[in-house]
Length: 239
Image (cartoon, rainbow, N blue to C red):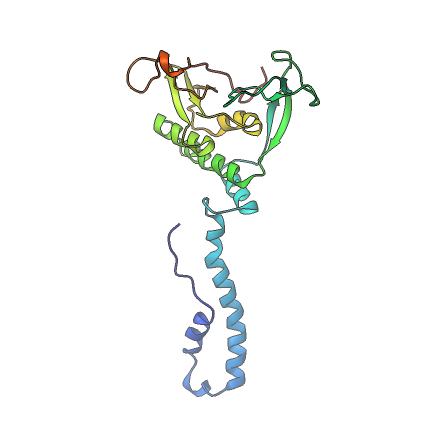
């Protein structure tokens, strides 16, 4: 934020005391009363001057960060499509839209069997919420170019995130790393705040390897490259 010269304790009081007429300079009781009243005003001025620091998007925490989010139209709690965990085993750097669990975890079912249901998720972690708030700024400003979209995605998922495909009517993003179960549940919320232009369908590629293709920047047959697999993040509906 822009540096501000906030007053220090006693500074404003003495500035005003210096304005007292000469004939009252020796009136100790009068000066004491004036200093007492001015001190309260000065204390309020110092606190007001420091107030913007509590709403710096880079350092705000708790309620202050929540308020910044509300200014941008972003709440901490959201309705999302919720799917039960599916049975499976994690092997290495696992990336999938499914949340994996074992037999003994309550509610675990087979892949492709569970139906999506309505649920609610709240972002209580300030650092995670901060990333969403920063991404929301691009959307609020109408910055719908690819560079802005990629920058916003990196606020949410980190520097590995990228736009891997953009076609007529759709754009596909990849976090570039395996997401935690909580991050996977937040994917619909992410697509609500990312600066994707109205009328453009946002999709997600969960893979973590290089994208298969030909030419510079693409992965080849011998580099464990992956084909782009666009998945609907169920941004607003559970269809």
